[in-house]
Each structure stands twice: as structure tokens, then as C-alpha cells.
Amino acid sequence: MAYFVTPSASSNQITSAINYALANLGGSVSSNLQTGRVGTGNLTIGYLYQYMDVAYANSYDGSVGFSTSPTNKSYFGIRNTNSTVVSTNPTDYVWYQVAGGFGTTKFLWYNVTGGRNIQFQASATAPAGYYVKSTTSLINLDIITSTLSINSTIVSIFQWTSGSAPARPTTTSTLTWATLTTSPVPSGWSLSAPSDTTSGDVLWAIQVPVSANVTVPTSLVDWTNTAYPIVALSSNGASGATGGVGLSNLVAYFQQNQSLSPPSFASSTSGNNVPAGWSYTFPTTYYVGQVIWYIFGQYNSTSLTVSGVPPNTTYWTGPTAASIFQDIRSDNWNGTTPPTYGSPSTYGTTGYYISRNTGNVYFNNGIFRGDITGASGTFSGALSGATGTFAGSLSAATGTFSGSLSAATGTFSGSLSAATGTFSGTVSASTINSSTINSSTINAATINSASTFAGTVSAGTINSSTINSSTINAATINSDSTFAGTMNAGTINSSTINASTINSSSTFAGTVSAGTINSSTINSSTINSSTINAATINSASTFAGTVNAGTINSSTINSSTISGGSLNINSKFIVDTSGNTQILSGTSGARLLIQNNVIKVYDSSGTLRVQMGDLTA
Image 1: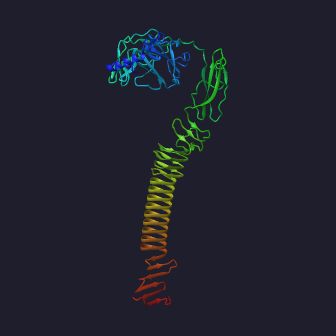
Image 2: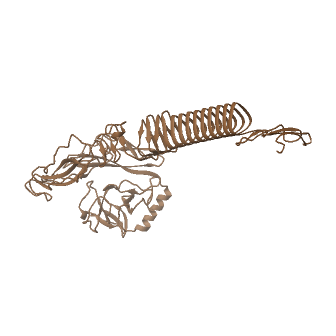
């Protein structure tokens, strides 16, 4: 407003304000002693009295929904007075309607411009930086709030008493503008209204307006200044009459076999009594396969009907099955109760069992998306998991692992697949896929491994870069290197074979070293054996004490005895399966030929010169 000036206004600003007032107010200024309003026409210049009470309501005269809170109100009322006691009479106020109402987001904001002039505005946020939100029912019009160059606020403290006003504080506080925190708080007072439900107690407050230049970090709050009165804000009403006796809540219990239907009960009993068969005492002994049920009761001990319950009667509702701490078993469990860990005969074949004391679980298939870690594991069904670590025994029908599997012993009647597997005991599975297998015994239809180390390997097919085993039994062995005491296989494919005994329908290897080799076909660059028995032997070199073969193809044979169906030594010494024998000193030029019953001699030109024996051959 042009007629408002700050305490720091220049002489030019003061002169302009006076000229404005003289030009606009004229001589028609009047005051209303009842409302305290001073003004001319519709222009309010200020108010006569120091304080302004503020209230809210939902009607034009304040008679509907009178309150000190603006929430969901449609009107606000103001009362100019010199009293610090806030009026609760709607007729003492002048009421103004708020467009759209306050709802839950709008508040009443005010601006005291000086000369006890005040401006109001209802909005969700401050209309300007110098507007103050109305948070109390009493506003001191001698406290100017309108200035952009100063900080201003009202600091309040509260105290409950049994009736009379409390003593004024004898200390001051410091207000920090950056955080709007006040300390220290006077003894016995609070910065917010504390809770109090005592009948007749009165809530008192002191409100001190504080303002300072925006560059000032702190300001003094003087509670000792009697210009700031101790105001009674509210009081607690008298306690109401004690209500009548209500219903007593009761609980009754019943234990029965889990296979039975929910137990029945009487819906009402006379007096404070449970239905037949039920008890107020929770069972202290629990039995596996039993369920504890409970029902709720409401007992009316009065002589009147309360909430539909007749006098001296208990109404019951339910039943509800309770969770109890005991072993848990399925209704189709056919093992022993309880089962004994390590004794498969007690595990049964159907249902499940969970032991409370040991934490053991007995069931069939198990599917795990993450890690399986435990002391030992016994599974009669399938075991599937990302990784598994077992310090004890691991037994399952099938197992699939994308990570590492470690166990002292492992028994699998189905498939075992893992990135790595280490077993110090026995591994039995239809299929084993592993980078490394260490086991005393391996039994599998198929073994796929980079390295296999075992005392005994029994499998339909073994695919491994290296096999070290005392005994190998397999239909087919595929390996870069095979080391074994005894090998029994339909087909052996290996770059190197070292074994005391080899029994195979077909053997393919770079080097074969064995005490005894029994094979229908042997293909090898070198064969070292005390005894070789084969239908066909194909080798660059053969070293043996005794060779028995249907056909032997070898560039070199060192043997004390050779027995075979046919013999071919570099196509120069040939014996077929019919006994036909042919010895050649060469294949062209001068040479000697001995064939069955004829001897022939050729000259260097290849002309036959001598023939003895059968001259017709």
C-alpha cells in the first residue's frame, strides 16, 4: 500500500505516504467501537484495539461448525478486542466467506502493516514473503509483519496447569533464524502443546513476535516482557460417567488327530463355562499328527443383555487351527514316527516328515534354484540346484548342478551333471558329466570327464581325456590316456593304454602296454604285451611272448610264439587262413619266389630262369 512505510523509510517515502493519506482519506474517517474497525467507506485503515481473535465456521454467522481450525471450513471470523482471552461466542465475530472454502490445503494468512492495520488472505501458500500463517487464535496488531527486508515470526511456549495461570519465565531464549529453532526452553514450558487429559486442566501460552533484518543470524526471545501476556488457550472438560461392565473375552482349546474334521462345540454355554470336551488350559503335551484348535468366547457377567449376549451366558465362535511347536508329518506318511536319520528303512516311501528337534526333513524330490550347503544330504528322489556342498553323504535318484558338487560319498541312480565333482567315496549314476572326477568307485552308464581318477570304473561308455583306475569295466572307452590294472570294454579308443590286462572287442591306441590283451581287433602304433589274443592285429611294432590272432598286420613282430589265421609280413612273408604260404625276396627284377610246392628264380630282367617242384604252377 502506498501509505505503508518501514521504520527505515526515507523522508521522500514518508512525505509520499502522508500526501497519499491526505488525498484519499478526506474527512470521512470513522470508527466502530463494537467491531473496532477504523476506516472510510469500504477502506479499512486499521483497528482500535490491540488484539484480533480468529475463528472458523461453516455458516455466515458462525453458528455451524465453529472451530479454531480452518480445515474443511467455509468462513473465517475476526474479533477486535483488548482482551487476551479468545472468545468462543460466534456472535462476537465478523464473518467472511472464503471462495471454494479452506478444504484441507488452504490456510488463513495475515499481514500487519502498522497502525493496527491487518490484511487477510486465504490460500495454500503465502501470498507474499511478508505474510504470516495464522496458527493461533490470537493476533497482536501492534506487531508489524509487513516488510521484505526483515525476518519475522511468532515464537510460542505452552504449559498446562490445574487452573490458574503459571508463573512467567525469568529467563530468555535465542531464536536461530536459519533453522527456526529456539533454545533454551524456559523450565516447565514446551515449544509445542504437550498432551494432558486431566479434567479441569488449562493450557496456557506466551506468544512473542520476533523480527530482525535478514542479515541477522539470531534474535533474543524475551519471555519476561509483560507486554506479551500469558493466554489461556483451552481447558479439559470433566470426565464422563463410568460405563457399564462389558463382555469378557475367553479362549478354549481342543487337541485331536489332524486327519479328523474340525471339532464341534456348543455355540453358547451357561455361565463362564467351556463347551464339553474343551479346556481353558493350553495343552502342555503335543503329539505328532495332532492339531490344537481354539475357539473364542464372550462371557456376560451382568444381569442385562450386552451386545446380544444374555445375562450369565457365554457365546462361542470358531474353531481355528493353532500352530504348535512339534514334529510335522503329512497325513499319508508311511515311515516310522519319528524316522531315524541314517536308517533308510524308517524313511517310508510316501508323504513328508519334518523333525522339530533335529531339523531333518524327509521327502522325495527337491528342486533348489540357489545354493545347497549342509553337513549331509539324503534324497530318494531328484536333487536339482545351482551348487551343492556336502561334508557328509549325498544320495539321490538324479542330480543336476550347474556349479560345484562336493561330497564324501555320492549315490545317484539317475543322472549326475556338474561343472566339477569331487567324491572321496562312491559315485553311482546313469550319466556323469564333470571336468574332474576323483572317486574310489564310479558306476555309471556314461562318464564324460576331462580327468577320471578312481579305484574301479564301471560304465557303459567312458569319455575322458585321462583315465587312471585299477579296474575299468565299460562297453566303450574313449580317452587320450588310459592307465588301469584291468580293462574290460567292447571298444577302447585311446592314444596310450597302460594296463595289466585288456579285454576288448576293439582296441585303438597309439601305444598299448599290457600283460595280457584280449581283443577282436587291435589298431596301435606300438603294442607291448606278454600275451596278445586278437582276431586282427594292425600295428607298426608288436612285442609279445605269445601272439594269437586271425590276422596280423605289423611292420615288426617280436614274439616267441605267433598263432594266427593269417600272417602278412611286409607283403614278403604271407600265410593265409587256408595255409597257403608265399615267400618273396623281392617283387621285381632278380628275385626268389617260394610258393607252396614250387620254387622260382628270376634274373635281373625279370625272366624266369629256374623252376623246381610243381612245374605246372
